[in-house]
Amino acid sequence: MTETSVPNARGDQFVDFLTRVAASKDRAAFASLFDHFAPRVKSFMMRKGSNPEQAEDLVQETMIAVWSKAAMFSTEKGSVSTWIFTIARNLRIDKLRRERSQLYTDLEDFDAPDLSTGAEEALGRSQEDNQVSLALAQIPAEQRDLLILSFVEDVPQSEIALRLGIPLGTVKSRMRLGYQRLRKLLETMN
Image (spheres, rainbow, N blue to C red):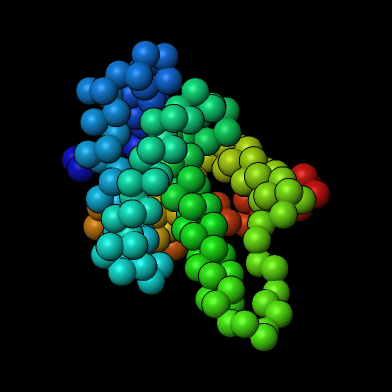
């Protein structure tokens, strides 16, 4: 069995590591989290269009945020993997917005649109992230894990099937059911 085919056992280990980082800034626990998640976050960033240097910078920013915000993690809102990839995704979005804004600041006679994240937008994104995490926690683990692998970690369905040792058709049907449940849950929250 691969480590991915036992998500709960590995997930419990990540929760333990993160709890130790939050409680006592345990460097060994953080190193274990870093060793597991840093290459995955870098791969995720590169698949989203970052060059290797940008991806590495985003990995560092993500892992610094994990170190400093470990106490903010709650198992009720989702898995460690979801939490870390949400941090990474948000940092990437913020970086892209800053870069877009900087492109316009060098032009003298041009009024650039304000692309900075306002407080309302940041609050809205935070609320959306919380709703998605709560909804994900309510769907069956076998469907939730597939959705996280596909949408958060950006793993292709064929690779998910290989990792978990299940047929591709099973992956597709579980993802479809999971997505339908997630959508219904999110609709009832709004």
